[in-house]
Length: 315
Image (tube, helix red, strand yellow):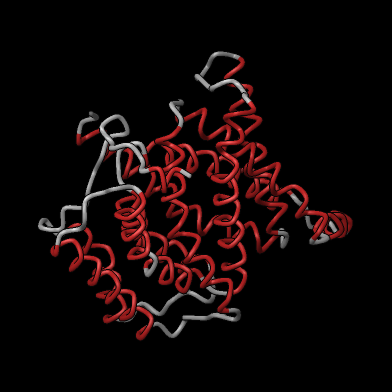
């Protein structure tokens, strides 16, 4: 069983990368308006990097096996949907709106954690803390003049994908004894293969060609794309590593603790940022602090101590 300080380090690391990744994706998509292509570069470069480092014995990456690849297929599909809907949601709304709808997905994850993964039921204190998170999100929406949504469909779908992804990933982790680097490699490789046809189906290869012809693929755009690839590798690895030790619900709640940092960075970069009124700030603080209430003990589990999946959940 890992120490509390080690788990805390993982949680803080993942929160830091996650909070900046949302804004970084927004910056990349502003210069390279081809969401599928950008995501392909992120997961593809990650798979190539991990494969090379594994071959050089810098890190331990599990060798490719077809049976393991099949097991990761559905997790790759879930990961692909999460990334794609995140990008589409950012095209259809500002960062604040995406954050709020992600927050509302926590209850769905908590129910799935209990029904599918046999996690212990949340205490009344934990449920109360989650309700405070939702109230903070609603308060933020009501006080935020910069709340902009042009396409509700993608924002809603992203919230559903965000609720489902940690559940699917937790099931894959329990069913495969691998290193976190190996899981990241398999996940990104399978995501790349599943995602590849989308570039041609959506006609983004023509978008990239036209962008290059017009000089849009400049140093700034390529630098931001490179940084997003590095961040993508980091967030994927840290996500798998964290989920070895925490429940799917805890993992979803973690995402809400980086909201203030994301809003501050976003406010410095974009015109459509939230107006930081007094009530808006209080709502943000509620979003941040509610999951940290001493009485709201969200479950932390170890991969090796976890109960086996029920047959219905494993099928």
